[in-house]
Length: 170
Image (cartoon, rainbow, N blue to C red; front, top):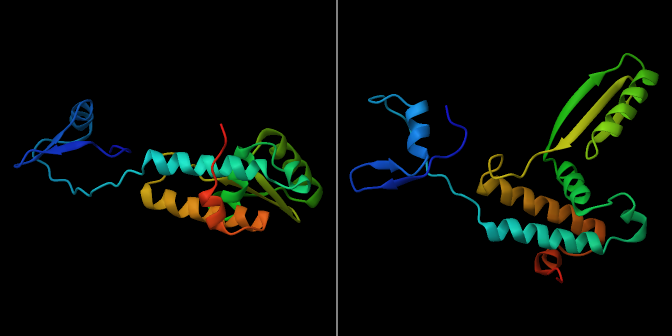
C-alpha cells in the first residue's frame, strides 16, 4: 500500500491519477479491485512558514536563563512538541539506577533533541514527532502548531496570539 496521498483529477466519470501517481497506482493497486478513497486536506505552505517565523522570533526573545537550554529554534520546537504531548516514547529497563544513568548519558550524547528521564532503573526516551507533510496531515499539524505555541507562549509569559502575530525581521 502507498504511504502518501495520490494526486488525482476528477474527469466527470472517474478519478484519474496525475503524473507519477499513475505509475505508483500500477505498482500498488489491482485493476478491477475496489478501494476506498478519502479526501486528503494538504496543509498550506503559508501555515508551515508561519510556524517557523513565529518560532524563530520567540527563540530570539528567550530570557537568558532559558537561552542556554535552547541553542536553536529547532531545539525549542522539538522540546515544545514533547512538552505538548507530541512525542514518541521508548522505555529502557537498565536493571539498576547506576546503569540507567549510564544509558541516559549515552542517549543524550547521541540524540541531540531527545528528552531523557531516569526513574530508578528505567530510562524514558522521548523524541518529538515529525511535523513533516508525510507524518502530519493538515489537522494534526494545526493541532501541534497550536499546542507548541501555547507551550512557548507560557515560557515567555505572553499570550499565544502575541506569538501568532509576530514577524521575523529579515
